[in-house]
Length: 212
Image (cartoon, rainbow, N blue to C red; front, top):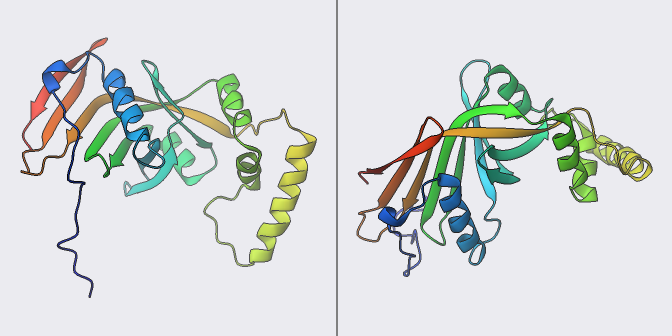
């Protein structure tokens, strides 16, 4: 049995955080933290997207953040994927970013809406060729009884992408998460962690300090 105690959680040196100096909007602070994390950790834009299935059971997976701004925080997937179907049935989601190398976490949750077809197509066509091929494979998360079928499907998808370089699948969807709350968490070695929550208030935001 591997002991789960004693492993270090964060580096010795942690960045500072002054909540009183935080900007008025959460996306501004997030972009500052994201840029800072990018200088220290791999895949700082990787985010855990949490949804619920038709039975109300939670589901989570790591995806890549595509963009963030006043209109929403963007991720993308096929509308026929499990997460796409879950968002169609219950358009609410949570996003969780965790950068242990900086002792920082950001959590956001809110309503999800699909972007326009043009925006979704542009998102798809900006993907690298291998990522476009993967999207054309389809059948995400279905049982694969014969791995040889994957090679066949990949070859067919590669041919399709090569023949139609400017075409996006109709099912490819860019989703915008419009947060109602965004929380920033900065670790401290004395366990007096700093937490700042933004709560949407009309067209603006209300900032609140939270107990650790």
